[in-house]
Amino acid sequence: MPRMWWVVGVVVLAAIFSAYLGWTAQRVERLHARAQSAERALDAHLVRRAAAAAVVAEHGDRVELYAAARLALDADPGDRESAENDLTRQLRAMDLDPADPAARALVNTSRRVVLARQVHTDLVRDALSARRRVLVRVLRLSRRHPRPEYFDIVEPTMPELPPPLTVPGHTPPPQRPVQAV
Image 1 (cartoon, rainbow, N blue to C red):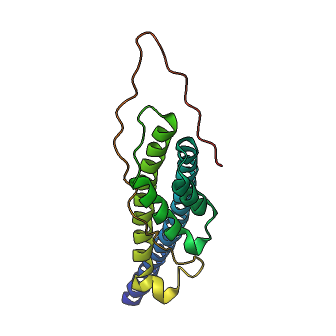
Image 2: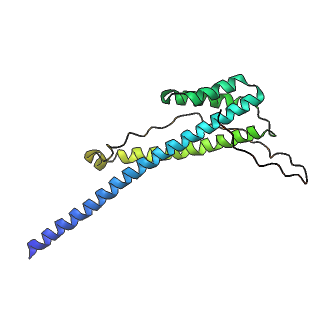
Image 3: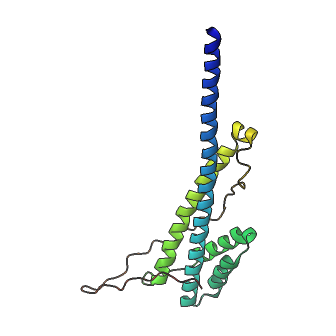
């Protein structure tokens, strides 16, 4: 009879360990999937920002800004951080017209880049933290996924634009999304 309790205890411990191992494997999978999704979202927001910057550059005849926007759009993955940093520096150095809808679109896309970068950074940190756990390393639970990387760019802060002036009795036309160049 005492031997039976020992067998039951081992089976229960094995079941608990299996459940924990399955939960850990699912967590690692989920964190890597979310980090990859956040990387794609950040990339999409960076492309939108570069396209909006190119539109603003064309309207204002700003050659340096247009060149930086084109470099950011056409950059290879290895050169992407540098190109985005150059674009950010160009954007910080310019004055935007509050009445220009293209400038407003640029400010909005830059704010979205900030949020997307924060989300991406948080998810990469969580995925890397999960990869460093002893059980994950020993059992190589993260071997199917590439190691997530941070995207280090200068924080793209843009000036606050006052709301556009409205004429009483006049409703402004709906704004169209900025098209990529």
